[in-house]
Amino acid sequence: MSILSKNQTKKVVVNAENHGYKPEVVTFKQGKPAQLKFIPSDNMGCMNEVIFKDLGLDEKLDGKKEVTVNIPTDKPRTYNYACSMDMFHGKVVVK
Image (tube, rainbow, N blue to C red):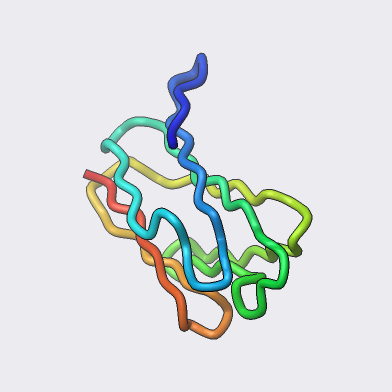
């Protein structure tokens, strides 16, 4: 699910669920502003945190709030992310 706003930022919703991220892979176009919005679920365990090592981000998903992550799109690259126990993974591809 993606929405283009007036400033043309592409926003993709990622559901952080008990058994992983949905969708697991998100693709953005190089040079276009991009954001991921993580929607937490209840009873999350290690999914209560999302870590982007390449971006130096470590965000808590406390089951009550959404977390928005700005994705750099200045060059083609893949950004991997994971839960706090590194059990569940997702990735963002900029191309």
